[in-house]
Length: 494
Ligand code: NAD
Image (cartoon, rainbow, N blue to C red):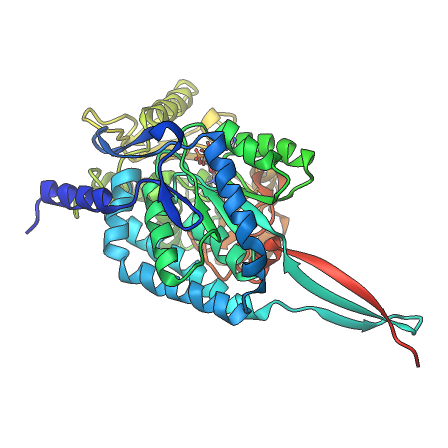
């Protein structure tokens, strides 16, 4: 049996073998001044790798490479683009074990969760390999006769793709897949905490046959100025961003200067509604998934639980029992269910939200504290009797904490669920079909899990309303984000 130490050594060896440079025009190169940034294992706080730390000049070189490759890639037959994506899909699955170890090393989540993310990430490549050949258009006889309306879809051009640390690969493939399928070239800027997964993937894309310059990867510790410089370059035509609403707002303002196309996948504050007619076992199972997936560090994470007062106690007791039974530890330990949070700030922020709830009268049913050990661990936590105005109910928690609030009737709980600037995911548990559909229609959210704790699916349109963003990724609409519509008015003489 391999020990944790051996697992860590194996993961570190994979990190050592992963390219650490900037990937520009099909080549690995150093950042200006050979600057590097350190990547930390959040379970130990140790630096496990150093990657290139790009300057604005480096980033503009990547934009130039993408712009140079744009025309030829757009002219590459759709079937060929699709086949390259399909090869990338197969290679990612083939390398799943190594990629999962690399991901756990830099991000912290358990190996089982990293494997699940790699599969999810790969599925976007397969889905969009199939979509590349289904970009359609239209033909219409103008109502007045005489001319014809010919509609075509063409690639937007060079796209800047900015991704967060919580899903280091899937948030990238969800953008790279449709962009490449549509015929766009890209510059990807992963989060500084988790650059290794994207660098490993860049190597896989090259191996799959993606031509030089079509995908470029820029890692940097100075996201603000580096991204701003690229957005100000007239050759960039689109920004697709996944991250916090706060940064999304900044990017939307910057995008205005060059009137860029934008897709924004931003923060969430998902309500999880349990009605008195719910199947309680299914609701608890769904709650564990919706809360604990990715250590609670997911934009779709159930953030606030509204439980009907008639079932509040058995639901709380069962959820607390399930969370208390989870093993917290290094993600590379096969026994681990729950890994560390990303950094010390995240632990501080979660602790602050719990303290606020307790000050407001909440009871800690399980957890309620950071773990006293190296790394950034917080115990899975269930809080009951939480005030509807508590910060943990109003703000994105991004950690393993479930605040429970009780309610009495449907209108009241819908009003509370909708009382948020966010509108990404929502969850509803009820055995009544009428109620399920009625509530789903009234919830202000881009996605609803009806009797289900997971909404992410490459075949579905993923995205939010209100301040959770604009645009949809995945599904049939995902590729539209990377296509412009052009129409030709054609005169036809009779
Ligand atoms: P973040 O907004 O801090 O960072 C996201 C990315 O933006 C990173 O690459 C970061 O380096 C970069 N960035 C930071 N400041 C920037 C700036 N001024 N200009 C340009 N780029 C900048 O978010 P995070 O902490 O990495 O991720 C967590 C957030 O992402 C949460 O709010 C979560 O809900 C959200 N998220 C949303 C989705 C979705 O699909 N809606 C998916 C995953 C995460």
